[in-house]
Amino acid sequence: MKHLLKLEDWSTEEIINTLNLADQLKYEQKHGIEHKYLKGKTLGMIFEKSSTRTRVSFEVGMTQLGGYPLFLSSNDLQIGRGEPVEDTARVLSRFLDGIMIRTFEQSEVEALAQYGSIPIINGLTDYCHPCQVLADLMTIREFKGKLEGLKMCFIGDGNNMMNSLIVGALSTGMSFSAACPEGYMPPEHILEFGKKYGKDKFEIVTDPIEAARNADVVYTDVWASMGQEEEKKIREAAFAGYQINKELMAVTNSECMVLHCLPAHRGEEITADVFEEHANEIFEEAENRLHAQKAVLVECMADEKPEH
Ligand code: CP
Ligand code: NVA
Image (cartoon, rainbow, N blue to C red; front, side):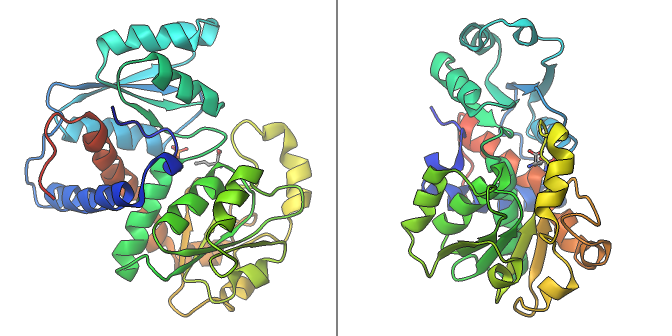
């Protein structure tokens, strides 16, 4: 059974195949070509955190694939009142054909897969955001025509986004640099993942300008993620200066892309002028959530895979 629990579970070949399928599904959707590869299938979508893009893109994507998306808020499920995930997994597996879950603990997603008997897709945890990174890689390929040999630079928190970007970029032949304040680095095993690629390919520093030098893509995310609202003030102080702005863009390669998973806080991790200058890239990236996730849904849930 194929799940998407975290990106490091997928090989480079699986990632590239999914990006190719995503391109095909985008083409089919834009040209009105029917692609109901999940006819009659139901996807449960468990949300224990807020969402605009993930919820809407999975719901619309499932519908376009001929299936049915079922929104399940943890406020309404018994899971929100303490029913064990092991039991929820075994019950939902008898009704549904797949589950997308957005939650806090990565271990909850892993437990759903362990106890359930249907594909599980991670729609964001505190640890990672694999669906977002597939859409990001798809967008970079679309604008740059390749991934191999490009340099991605992340400015900000060593959080779920950065963890998945490290895996996604390095697995597809990009090099990766980041600037994080002391105390906000990614977890040790992600650093170990990166170090295996060597110093030429993977570097984390504290100086944003040093990290951004000769970048082909710069990426940022909010300073305080969902669940960290109480740390907002402390984080504003820690991340001051960790911003994508004109000065930072000046040291990147010409034609450097700017990506942001959204939602964005203008004046914090990115200035309004740089955001607007790169809005076509950022909103194509948001749209590509739909196409990339449709590819993930087909890869994990379809009885028969389309030729691509
Ligand atoms: N980027 C992203 O996952 O957006 P949502 O939180 O709106 O789903
Ligand atoms: N790091 C952010 C990403 C939102 C898509 C969060 O977890 O809130």
